[in-house]
Length: 175
Image 1 (cartoon, rainbow, N blue to C red):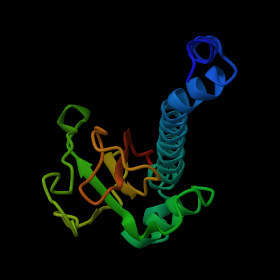
Image 2: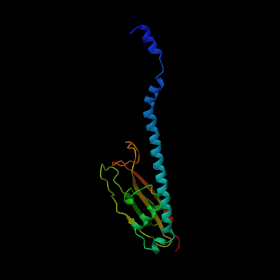
Image 3: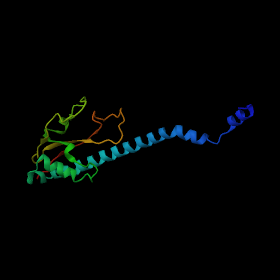
Image 4: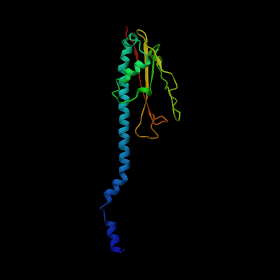
């Protein structure tokens, strides 16, 4: 090539925008997808929290005791309030129990977080309707499917799902 053509080629900037886009586009789309997945996770967590709180009202006012609910009935009530966002509620774990006072409310994750594959719940579901004026602790856990498989998400399980939880503590009304 002649010297003149090399100088002309070095000054040509017609494809610079396309090359810059090719370099930055994967990073941009990865950040965009991470933002969208995080938004969906926060939305799902809020919907679960709201569903648990609303379904727990039936316990608080004595409706669950009157109708002799089981853990499956409570799960169905919560699932009916999730607006189809969660799909199958088989991945939900319920822990509803009576505690002595508000200070004794504690939690334990019913899942082995170090499990590598085929992880199942490590604790049995607990269901108590509670009596009149009883202090109740309600905990619900759900293994939510993830779209993207980011390796270092803080609540990611080994199978790629995300552990969502919701809890509420209240005193039953004197029914």
